[in-house]
Image (cartoon, rainbow, N blue to C red; front, side, top):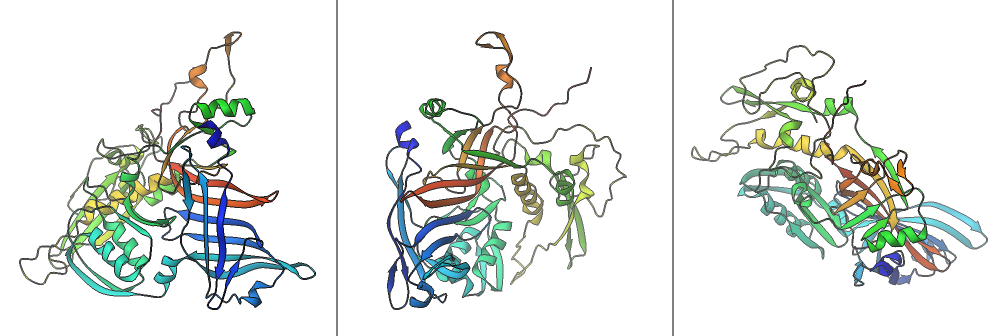
Length: 461
C-alpha cells in the first residue's frame, strides 16, 4: 500500500481533445498545465488549462465560446485500483493571459465550465409545486431542466412544501430550496454541488457521518524514511499546511453564529412571535460535528451587555444569560409566516416552519467557517469535496526529555485544537507537465466546526 501511495502523484491521460462544430483537435502536445476546481458551496465545476500553442488554435479551430473539452485521466488509489478523473464535457468560457512568447508561438489560458452550468445559464423555471418533498422538487428540476450524463445523488428531505419558482435559473431555485430543506433528523444544512461526473444535494449532517477517507500528518521537517513510516501507518505526509482561519469574533457575532433571533409575522392574523437560537443548542447530542467540543467556552463575558429587547411573545428558544451565546440581539432576522400560505382551500394548513430551519441552518453553516486549513499533497484522485479527512498537526512547543530517548511531554506534542477530522469544502486538482510527464497535486480547503479538546482557561499563578 505504501508503494502505491508514494506514486499517487503520477497521472495518465487517455485523451485531451477540443471539440468544435467542425473538427476535433488533439491537445496532448499543447497541454502545459490544468486546474480543476470543486467547491462545496458552488453549484458547478470549473477548469482552466494552459496551452503552449504553435498552430494558432484560437484562429484555426476557431475558439469562439462554442467548443468543449473532452478528457479522461486516471491514477491509482491506495488499493491499486484505477480512479478516473472525468468531469464530462467542459465548455469554453474565455481566453485570458494570451501572450506571443516568440516567433510563431503563444501561450494562453483557456477557461471552461461544466455542461450543467451551461444548461443552467440558458434556461429558467416558472413553475409551482404543491405538496411535494423538497428532494422530489430538486430531482424534478435536475431531470427536466439540467438533463445530462452526471450521476445524481439526492438525500431525502422531510415534510411537504408548496412553492412557486418565479422565472429563476435552476441553480438559484435549487439553492433556495436547500436553504429550507430539513433531513429526517431535523437538521437543515443541505448543500448543492457538482464533483467529477456527479451532482449532489445532501446535508452536511450526512457528510460528517461518513468514514474518514484519508489520514494526513504534517511536519515542516521530515525525512524520506519518516514519510515511509507514516505511509505504513496509513497516514500521508502533507507537502504544505496553511492555517487560513480559526475564528473572527466580531464577524461571528454580527452573522449570528453565537446567538440570533428570528421575528415571524403573520400578516393575516396580525400575529408576531420571536424565536431564539444559540451555539450551545447547535451542539446538542443529535447533531453531528467534526469533533466533540464547540469552539468556544461557556464562560461569562468580561463586558456587560444591556438588557435584550423583547419584540414579541417568545416562541422557540428563550434562555437568558451573560455569555456570548445568550446575546440574541447580535443578529435579528425577519420572516413572514402564515398557517395557510399558498393555500387553495380552508383545509390546507401549510406551514413554512421557518422557526425550525432559518436560525439553525445559519448557525450550522457559519460553523464551517471557523477552523479552516489549506493543505497541499500528492494527488489522490479518489478524494472529493464533501469527503472527510483526519489531519494530525504537531504542537509548536519543545520536546522535553526525562532521560535520553524518553519524552516527558509526549501528550503535549499534538495540537488538539488543530488536529482532528476535517470536511473538504474546496479542492483544486493541479496537473502540470514536468520532465515530459504529468504530475498530479491537490490543494484542498478543509474545515472543522468543533474541537478535539474542551476549551479551558488556566488560572495564572
